[in-house]
Length: 334
Ligand code: HPA
Ligand code: ZN
Image 1 (tube, protein in one colour):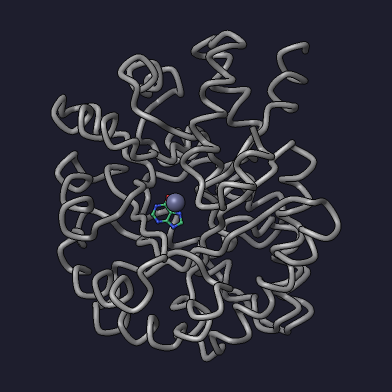
Image 2 (image 1 turned 180 degrees about the horizontal axis):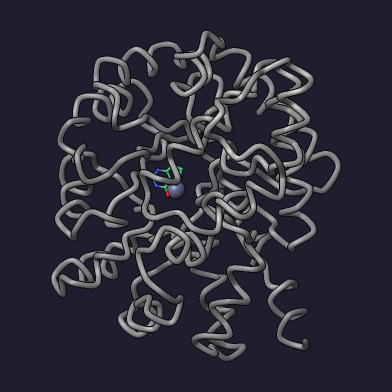
């Protein structure tokens, strides 16, 4: 109980949360009704059925099949705003001071929703959260790796004005990992980085893919952060590289259990990363689907690894240092 309030008060930053993955079943069904969307008959038909089904995903793809159906209820700018505001409100109540949030424009554009509708709704929520809570936020656009690089390049083009204005800060890569390795997206990353040298680059790697997916993301995509990266544990050389370059791994412990990457959080190499000076943050990934927000993830890690107060402060500090906010904001967060 004392530890719960200590972890809540720690200055936490979130670097790995998909806004579409914060769509709680209750909001999902409300929006389906509001927008007169009929969900496919194989989708769980109620909040209770969702909670039951979400508790037994077999792997990443099984989750993604639900995630893409879930996001189909998002139609209007206000839907994207409402979704993000629910997340920012929850993150604030968990003591999260700075969030860098993913979204998947291709998952909306392919349904006929314009990227402007998506970005305007999310951006309005970012600004409202800053006004209301004083929390800071950054939007990271992700490319869906199961779609061709040509679609990724088109998406980068469509988002051009938002990178120019700083409304979108970063680029990530998500969806089905193993069949779609990093080299497929070399051109997408290089194109964006050439036009906008200040952009933050990250990619999902080493969640279901092996450690070479992490190394290839570093070498070919020039990312400065790795989302998940748990399989980095199997290469000592890579571990040393991550530590030496201060490359942040955005770990998602409850996600890894729900998607059966591991059976229990205690099997994750979190102590190994800590002891080898590999920087990491602790994140929620798709909290509406995996049953826990950022504080739940911190608490679960604490119950399994029992870090002391000093170690927790170091973990929080590594998260601040690995954030993409400016130095003034980092100083405030520390
Ligand atoms: N991995 C890959 N793609 C995703 C994830 C994830 O954990 N969450 C949402 N899209
Ligand atoms: Zn993710």
